[in-house]
Length: 448
Image (cartoon, rainbow, N blue to C red; front, side):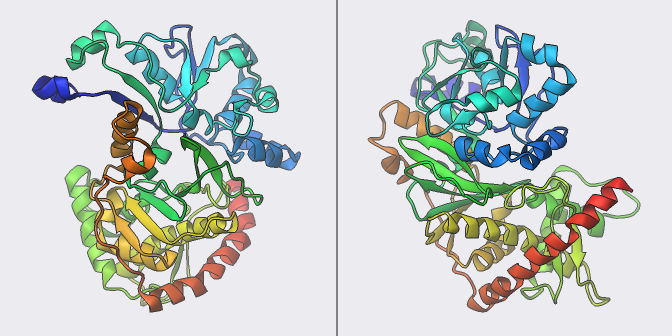
């Protein structure tokens, strides 16, 4: 931002914010942190999530808030904190996430958050558009401790003097509250109409599709978060994406006499491994990978799941192990796609973004497992582009979100290979059965 402002500051129309979801942090009255930020990956509230599932409240909370009951959510994190330090929960002036922290640091305004980030907390009723009383009771917080929820196109107060000085932006530069990183990826790849799904594959991965009204998956497999203008994003995130290949490159390809490679060296090792895997036929010579190295969110919502290879034979080597890992991640996304379609959305195309889709192997396997054409966005930073487009829309540069989405550049579609798609479709029930069969085994391993 500072470089852009110095080069051509008069062309900075607005600053629009994107933030990761599910973080939780106690704050003082000025919005400064009073403790650590618990990120989406923090699983310490697993027991609280399990209790809500066991006593039957999880399904009702999910139906109202659109957020599955899982340790990722601020709802269960607050429930954990309430048990660990009830006085802290009661006496903390403000509770919020990463977005509220950034807003407080950038501008002079009251405690606000966008509807998109609020809808990912497990505390916000996406139908009545208010903080949910029962969820707040579970969390042990009062409405006044939470932010005022505003539209994702809301323009906030002026920049703080120190921020204006550091960035070179005028203090009156419009600061648009923006949305969460996930829903902005949909806008950033131009997928804001029903029927077009977005897949993001970075460290983790997600599949999302837009609806005009909030939609709930009765089986509890999907989230539903706000974007803007009666656009709601239905989908599921999986914990394990490109991180699985990074694990494979360290486990199978890193030299014995050196420390684990970092930065460009690690990227190069990943690329070489994917090149080797690309020569392996679909199905990895009869090898399955359950890629649950960090537990799993959609569609299982089971933090205790573990990774596993099933069907190992002596003939399997580094290429098959890597190809099976890529297939495992894409099969998880296909299970999310199945849940989205079961919830009433018919998908015809996928738009892909994220670092992993620079690899032709990832794109080809994704197209075949989803059995849909995949178009990769020209910009690998779908979320950042989505934030820019939302900011321009908030300033009147576009008449609606469809016009904003129309400017996104996309590569030609990669069509699914029919034989590969058929093989992956046959394999998917095996993955489901194997996962369910190993749940108790994984639980016993946790106790060993």
